[in-house]
Length: 558
Ligand SMILES: [Zn+2]
Ligand SMILES: [Zn+2]
Image (cartoon, rainbow, N blue to C red; front, side, top):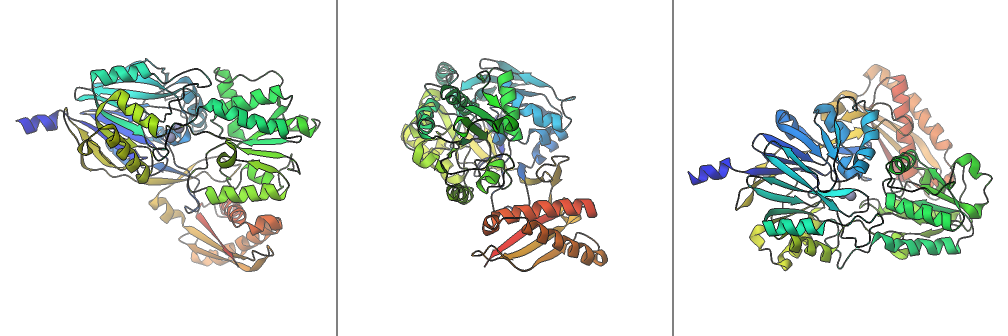
């Protein structure tokens, strides 16, 4: 009878991504016949995942239980938390709850995918309470690098579970909205069954500095630079963008924003009142030509050295409106996502070749993290006093480091659950354990190239077998930047054998032409030719054969 009770009265939490990997945060919270999905994020592919633009979680578990899914609730507007939302909503129609800025950022992607008509978007704010069947949700204010972030306290008859979402305990956030310490400690007094907490910076000792701390460091650059100032940050970093706009005003500079996502987010954030744009501060590229260099700031995305981003084109001297010159300052005001370090370092080299001075996070404090360091993580545990602790959001090493911190704070080892993506975390009134695994995976998304954000292709294994693979092998002499020999093309499962030879011969010419158009500096950096080959071949095959094979460029440095 007792055992029966345990199985009957239980809650399940299933991470479908984000545990043991960076990005793609999504969790299913289930109590009997009700499921609430917390976040639906994507992962940006690393250098080694060739031929794809985005990675999203496999929704199989949610699709199998589609009649039970009540809602998606969002913690904040970063892509690793909302980037897969459109793909999920294409398959399941449920209402989406988020704070105004979070929904504002999600809106664009949903519109592009024609989903706005049948998806309900519902505003929440800290203190909102929501009920989905037997699942009660309380919204908790949190500080993070993006405004309007929240966590959730989810209560079922089994108990209360706290999800921090991404957070830091910033004591002087730019918009004045503090983490809701009172609510967290009240929950702690009432009794928290389990805490799911952000592990990103669990290996970092001390406290994460406040966002306000970067301003004087960036200001130094404004004091010393007499030429153009280029600033790269994430399009969602509204606080950071505010700092740049304010400094530009104070130093009599105008700001040119480049990049579609940055422009869109600035509009959304200012419409919603999260960004105040000093009057007359923004200029467009055509106006910029008449503004003296010393009065110009260029604000752009591309801080991860994405191969086709405007910042990368600037680094290679190939941007259509601006040329980086001796005396310019380049501020990289963002975290380098693990896996992109080598690429960003090469970008810095190219800026230096043009005589720019580069300021980055590591040496110049041009960025502070949006995630809690060790002392803040311990404080979160002390405030909520959970019986069980589950570190989330990070690779295994960060989850493990966070588990060790929890032990320092006094949570016994047997009450710390180190779970990974796909684990079914079962909770009863007095225990938490891993009860098997559900099918999880990744789906690779090909957005169809740079400018042409037309229709989006989801590439699963089956798709791959239908559309095939084209491998392009090019040898480039690293010293001279010359292409050696002719490019080799190998195609599998793509076009009919008899047509293949003709198409591949033409495709080879496409590659030769594209590489001819590159500068020597671009050819020496294997990343650039690889991305150009991928884009050009994609375009070629779509036009000539109507197919979308996966293009895998292989550049051999000799
Ligand atoms: Zn975040
Ligand atoms: Zn995150």
